[in-house]
Amino acid sequence: MKIAFASSEAYPYAKTGGLGDVVGALPKALAELGCDVKVFIPKYSSIDHYRYDLSYCWPIGEMPIRVYGKVYNVNVFTSNLPDSEVTIYLIDSPEFFSRPEIYTNDPDEDERFILFSKSILEALQRLKWQPDVINCNDWQTGLIPLYIKDNYSWDKFFDPIATVFTIHNIGYQGRFPKETLNKAEIRPELFYENSPVEIWNSVSFLKTGLMYADMINTVSKTYAKEILTPQYGAGLEGVLHYRNDDFYGIVNGVDYKIWNPEDDRHIPFHYIRDTRHRKIENKKFLMDAVRLPFHTEKPLIGIVSRLVAQKGFDLIVDAFNELLKIDAQWIILGSGEDQFEEFFRRGAYYYPEKIYTYIGYNNELSHLVEAGSDIFLMPSHYEPCGLSQIYSLRYGTVPVVRNTGGLADTVSDWHELLYEGKETGTGFTFDEYTPDALYSTLYRAVKTFDDKVTWQKIMYNGMSEDFSWEVSAKKYLELYRKAVHKRRG
Ligand code: ADP
Ligand code: GLC
Image 1: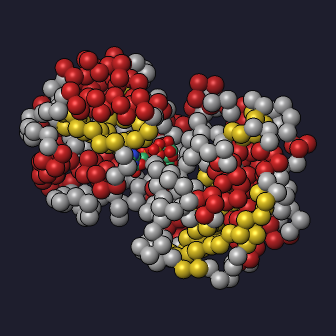
Image 2: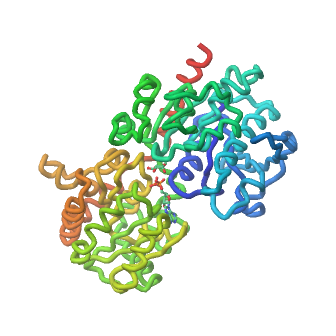
Image 3: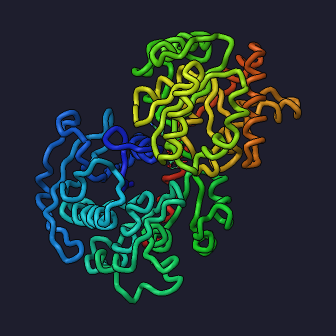
C-alpha cells in the first residue's frame, strides 16, 4: 500500500509535541510492514538544511501555488526520515515558513496551511506518485480531503486516492473568518449554518477534514468515546456522531529506538528493567546539573509539557500550597501560556531547594527528566493520547495521571488493582478534575514511594509494558483499507 502523510510536524525536523513524535515514527512502522510511505511537512526556517542533508527535488521543480489571488513559487526539498526508507518532502515557501515559531497568531496563519495543502497535492501530481491514501493530521491539513473531492477533482489522478483524517487534538480547530473562503478558494455556496466547512459562523479546517475525509480516527479508544460527548467534543461532537460509522480510536505507539533507557543517547547512565536500580544515577546527574540538592529519600516529580490549560496546570496552581507540604522535589520543563510560565518561574525562585523550572523547548532535557525523575505528573483536563506518560513507563518513572483519554488507556492504578487482588498497577490515577483529587493521588504516590519494595514492583510493571508501534500500525493499515474501499467502492 502507498501512503502519503500530511503533517505540520515530524520528528526530528519539526516538533512542538506528540504530533511530531507520531509522524516521525508511524510512517517508519508502516514501511516496516511493507508500505511505500512518503511524508510531507513545511520547511520551517528552524530546519537545518545541512544537518539533514536535504536535496532539491528536481522531479517536482518550482511550483506556482495560488493563495488569496497571489501566486507563490514553491520549491520542495527531500531526504529520508533517519534510519528508514521513508522519504520526507519539505515544502519550501520562505514567505510563509520563515517565522520564529512553527505556529503563529499572524493574520495569514490560514494562508500558510492553505499553501501547504495545495502544494502537497501539486507535488503528488508532478511526482506522478499516486498514493492509495493520504493520512491528514490535525487542522493544518484539513482542507486536503475537500480539495481532492472538489477543487482538484478535475484531475482523474486523484480519483482513486482515499483520505484518512487523524484527530490529535479536537481543541485546535483551525477556525478563521469567512474571508478565508476566498483565500482558500472554497466555493462560497459551501458556507452556510452547520455546513461541512462552517462552525459558529467561521470556517473550520478541522471540521472540513472531518466532513470530507473517507475515514476518521483519533489517537486512543477512550478519547474517541469522550469526544462524542459535549463535555469533550468542543462543539464537534455532532459531526463525530454523524460520521460515527467511519470513526475509530487507535492508540499511539512509541519509537523505542528513541525513547528507551537502554540506549538513550541523551542520558548518561543506561539501564533496563532488571538494572533499574541504576536509574538513580541519572537522578543524581540531573539534580546536580540543575543544582537541586540530591536526596535519595525524597521523590523527584517531573513534568515535561506544553504549559497549556489542557494539561491540567490550573489544578496544580490551585493545589499548590498543599502540594508544597508533600515532601518531594520538582523539575518542570515546558513552555506555553504566560500565566503558567510565570507561575513555575516564581515557584523555582521562591523554593530553589525544592523546584527547578526550565521554560522553553529542550529535547535533551526532556529525556533526562524522563530518566531522572521518580514520578511523572500529567493531570490533564483532557488528553487525546499523551506520549510522555508512556515514555515514563519505560523509564521506570511512575506516572501520576488523570483518568482521561489516552492516559486512562495506558496507565493503571496501583491501589485500585490491589483491591482486586492484583499487583499489576503501573501508576496512580484519579477521576475527578479537582485540586483535592490531584493532591490526594500525588500524596498516595509519594507515600508508596517510601515503601521501596512496592515501588520497585510498580516500576517493574511499567517497564514491562510494550507500546511499540507495530500493533497500532497494523490497525492503521486496516483503516486505510477501509478508506480505499469506501473511495473506490
Ligand atoms: P502533546 O502532544 O499534547 O504536547 P504528548 O504527551 O503526546 O503531548 O507529547 C509531548 C511530546 O513533546 C513529548 O515527546 C515531550 O517530551 C515533548 N515535549 C513537550 N514539551 C517539551 C519541552 N518543553 N521540551 C522538549 N520536549 C517537550
Ligand atoms: C496531541 C495530543 C496528545 C497526543 C498527540 C499525538 O498533541 O494533545 O495527547 O499524544 O497529539 O497524537
